[in-house]
Image (cartoon, rainbow, N blue to C red; front, side):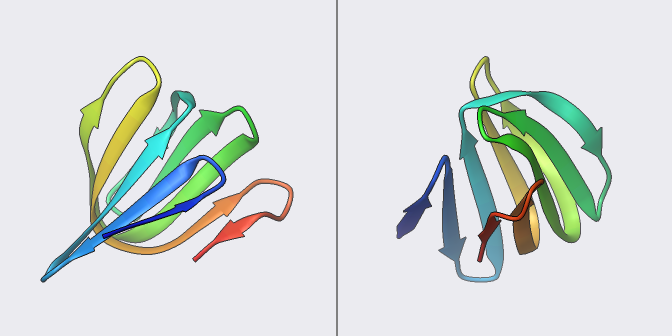
Amino acid sequence: PYRRQRQMCIRDSVGQSAALVEGQHGVIELTESRVRLRTGRGVLSVLGEGLRLRELSVDAALIEGHVLTATYAGGGRTP
């Protein structure tokens, strides 16, 4: 199941979470607890545990791990 909000889709499955970010324009930061991406809406920060970048294409990124929050710089928050 997918929930689409703004330019981000979140997929939850048993024992694992993933965030598919569409419309990304580059990786700013990548650690096990935070991934920051440039998007058309600004900088998207994904916080969690055991995060890793599974796939990266010209305009999309698949982040795997236990995703806790996703927040756009400037205030927009995606649960």
